[in-house]
Length: 210
Image 1 (cartoon, rainbow, N blue to C red):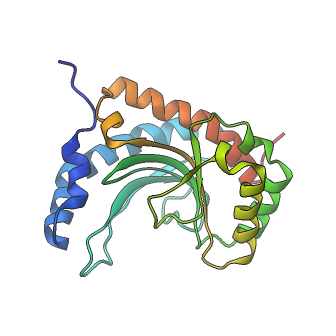
Image 2: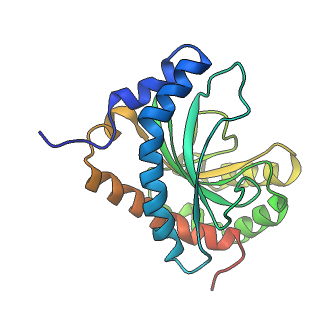
């Protein structure tokens, strides 16, 4: 039987009760994979030529009571901190895995980013039909871009400009069951393909495009 990269055990970490037990499982089961992915895909993204990317494995260090409901490794062109920058993420909820480009509420250029995306909407509308969009990284739900359409995208981008806590995430979700069927080569190829489609969006976001 071919060894798969992810397993049901990884996703079950987010169903464990208690902060200590969940954090221990997260550190022992999931974070080693995040570090592997971080080492590999920081080099992959750096090869795009728009800055050197560095991996940031979420530590959830400020938590004292509530266990994390999701976790991730982020990629940004900065050694320290990433939340104020447009960044990529590979992460898990209990139900699914996500690979996204994220502009979250700490970003100081949300208005400029939204305006650039509004002016180059085709980088979003031409994404493959399984790509999703979300306005809140704290919620697991997202909508398919081809279902929300241009009008829905415009509403999310207007909100990004006008609401302090508004966010913008675009990428792919795959169910835990689907992820657990992929071997390492298949999963890495899936991530590479997702990033290939997201990098033109990133170029518009950072105002570095032809």
